[in-house]
Amino acid sequence: MLNRQGQTPLWALAIIIIAALPVFSFPALLTSAPSDLRAIVWLYPLYVLTAAWLAWACWPSRRLMSWILIVLMLLSHGAMWMLATMPLS
Image (cartoon, rainbow, N blue to C red):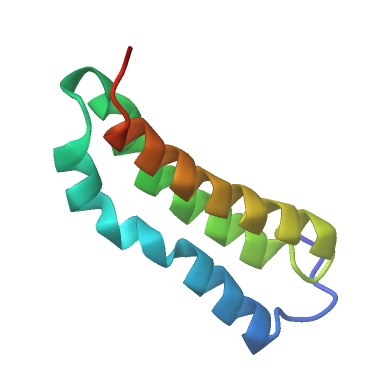
C-alpha cells in the first residue's frame, strides 16, 4: 500500500481537518442549489472526505501532493458555493 516513512504530524492533520470543515455546511448548500445541479452537490462531501483522507495518507512520502490536495479542497469549497448561489444565465 503506502510506504509510510513516518507519521503525519499533528499540525498537518489539524490543517487537513480545518480545510475539510466547510463540508459541514452541506445542508445549507443543498437547499440553496438549483434542482438540476443537486447531483453534483451530493457528490461534494464524498470528494472532500476522499481528498482529506488522501492528503493525510500521502503526507509522509509526498508532502507536495498533500498541499496540492488541500488547496484543491479549499478551491472546491468556493466553487460549490458559487455553483449553488450564483444564478444560471
